[in-house]
Amino acid sequence: MSLMDNFKDWGKAQFLDVVQWLDDSNDIMAWRFPFRGQEIQNGGKLIVRPSQAAVFMDEGRFADVFVQPNTYTLNTQNLPILATLKGWKFGFESPIKSDVVYVNTKLFNDLGWGTPNPVMMRDPDFGMVRIKAHGIYSIQVPEDPEAIKMFIKQLVGTNGQYTIADCQDQLRKTISSKLADTLTELKMGALDLNAKLDEVGDAVREKLQAEFLTMGVKLAKLVVEPFTLPEEVEAMMDKRTSVGMMAPVMGAYTQMQVADSMPIAAANEGGIAGLGMGAGLGFGMGGMMANQMAQANQGYQQPMGMAQAAPAAPAAPVKTIKEELTDLKELFDSQLISQAEFDAQRTAIMKKHGMGG
Image 1 (cartoon, helix red, strand yellow):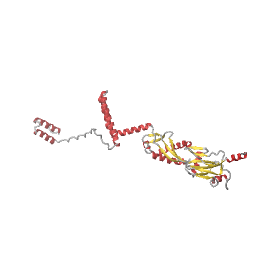
Image 2 (cartoon, helix red, strand yellow; image 1 turned 30 degrees about the vertical axis):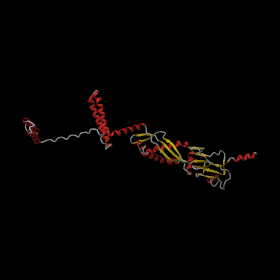
Image 3 (cartoon, one colour; image 1 turned 180 degrees about the horizontal axis):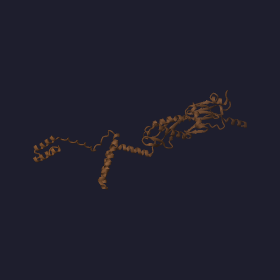
Image 4 (spheres, helix red, strand yellow; image 1 turned 90 degrees about the vertical axis):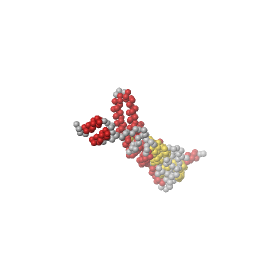
């Protein structure tokens, strides 16, 4: 083989017949075709596979965008914008000197997010509360030429390849920021958040969608996992639950505590006298607490076995002097009292009613 033949073979090797991207990774979002001094042969083939888009760029300017899966023949018909930029008004025979950026338009699932620092929120029960949140989200570059151009311009830039890891930190911070704003607007208490996770997630996603699209990325899904509350708040919640459980029997519980303390108090200085004052206070406070809690637990029935308080006996009606003397006479006639007792009782009745000396 002569030197001229070698030169021809070398020159032929500089022109590419096929431009394609075979991606075997799960995290590459964009990939720039590595020409390394090579050029695309006029009439060459461009292969775009499902979940791919190919973008031609000329000296930093966007040219033609291919979003439909197909094998394209590269000529002025398929590259009208690039032909205009190059001034190929009547077709071109020279090689194509342009960058080709492939964009992965598949759905990137199960990406984790979390608040790097606790989010402050105002709670109606506990005041200012710090909470932590985490979850997963899914993103996708829309199969829209303008969105693809925005993605390349805002995120990819001149990188040879762009991965999920390159943008994940920025996206996480954006989610955390909008989460704090959303919690302020929803005005939910800490006790309600975990019961309405779907509602919180939808509200955050709606707020984030427009901001993600400014980067050429669509937020396809956002899942909020149960919120994590500070230990002191969880302790207060447990205490409130315990008090709520004790409300129906608080009066009986206070009485039991006082009864249990009586033997101890009797053996100590002050004895039962000191206990009496303490018991009075205990019963009084127990009654107040029981009354307050009974309002929140209407319909509660007193447990079986607990002594019922006896109703107060009505006051006896006052008898007239006639009624009293009649009753006294019946006693005398029935020989239940003697004459002397009759006379003494009669004199006492008369004096009580202001009669007699």
